[in-house]
Image (cartoon, rainbow, N blue to C red; front, side, top):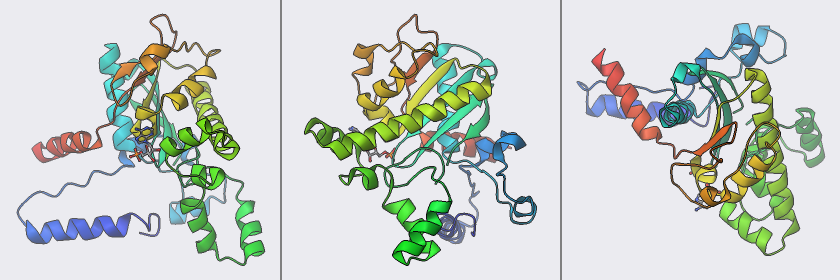
Length: 278
Ligand code: AMP
């Protein structure tokens, strides 16, 4: 519980309630971190004193694994290529956001409060900022972390909203803070995609998923425009869509780019069937 105080206590209440109500029914827990257990040590270690890993298991775990697994498998199916031969980057851009590199079906890297800017979460910041803000505003560490989780990200920067529909509208209305939040968001996504292309030494496909990735053509187009050098050519007509599974790069684009609506419920059901059948 100490590693995920917002999520795990609530999950355990649900598990216990199901066990009480249906004592003879198998109870399967599908961890959102499981897919990332293949990350190499070089990807999950933080450069802090090693005892925090050895004794407290402080390391990168990675989230949205169910979604990254589902979407990267779907990309292999769409491309009709073996999953274990494909290098894919999945951009799960929703209220929470994470970008994951999948090399040969294995998660090789991921960003979770760290990483890209999210709706209300800050993404990467210099950790010393926590001390500066705590001292300046007389806040506890808990209060600063709460601010980084709930009052930051696109909402904090734009002072408009955490919702990209509002951000897009505000940009159209000429709101400079909304535009600046959008630009910072895009830059972060591009940085992580670029980093993962280097880590994997190449990329065959990039997929956009979750609320923003599936619905916001402006975000997708802005990210793709930065990746021309890497071999991404956008098909603007195809990108002019919402919530559909579609290829949004051109046929001759070296790197293929897709929108793949995620389906975490289906992925969880599949894993459950597999476990119960064992
Ligand atoms: P998620 O956490 O995956 O449900 O994503 C929620 C976020 O997706 C919202 O806060 C919006 O920013 C974004 N979103 C959802 N629907 C749309 C839409 N129709 N157009 C643009 N953005 C959307």
